[in-house]
Length: 290
Image (cartoon, rainbow, N blue to C red; front, side, top):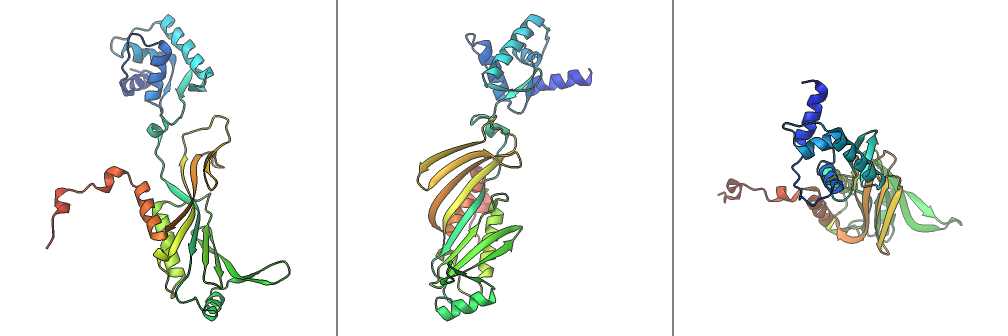
């Protein structure tokens, strides 16, 4: 058996079993076969082999020509993708994308507010702390101080913008749209904040996440000519689907929140870990230990 025939044999062998009824149209059968294996590319002959069975297969040019015509019709109706001449593949959609890939959930556009940090609530303490951290004063066009200070801090090739008000309010913003944070990186970011605000008393229960973007980057999904889809649910809650500069399709959801930093870490853990692994304890792990 030649390498070419072996490859075609494997395509048919790896195709998931699809059951059909006698009344199913040829178009429905072809679409079901292609969608059942969204990573695989099909030709009219491989579709024919799947329909007729791989054992004792007999090539029939009329049958294959009919399938080829139907494949072209499905591609023209945007039901499947035409990859190159004679080769077709499933079109990525909500039904097939989960079969193609399952990218990691990541965060960007993170804004955190600390209402009051114990230890720098007095004005002289704040000014001393800001001086040691090299913050710059923010003033209006006439030069009048706005009683707040700001600084950009580098962290893992990203920039954190920290704004401290003399009243004790602290605003922390991490954009990182091009380098969104995974769950471990988000935990490291929180650890960095713990250390940065030392020796003052900074607790995660006193820090609130008020804005965050939650997204997934799909490498094998395409928008087929659409540059961006944006859906608005409420005034401050919207989701967007677009293709970024690296050619990945990003699904992102922007939220206005008011949850503690500790709660945000726990939520991120839940949405980043498949449910089947959350409580995958063996009987030995549940035993009481003296």
